[in-house]
Image (cartoon, rainbow, N blue to C red; front, top):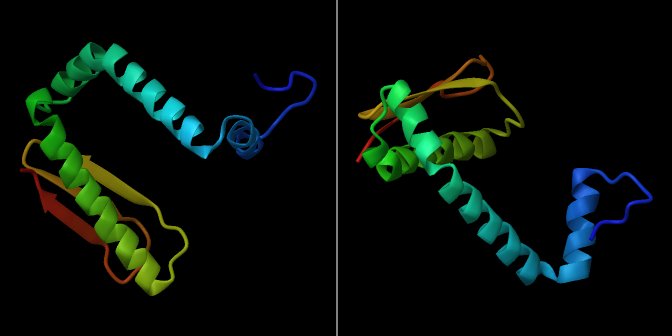
Length: 115
């Protein structure tokens, strides 16, 4: 589907596919492929979570807590005009925490309880 005679950047690949398929079909195709990959890797992901001490049964709740932490940090970055920062994220069955490793941000810890 992609032209074989030239090397494309990731952004150029998306533009090419969007022009060839249309935005809606491209979006549908990408979402469907992500779902296929997720289903195919579910048992591996569950085992990896268990090795880390995370409960796969709390996958949704942990994911929502992580999303809330990322949203808080994103809001802080947008409101303070910070373009980039480095941070460490820790997740457990009880909470998700992001600790920003950068002194130029107004808030350095974001926390969200799971579930």
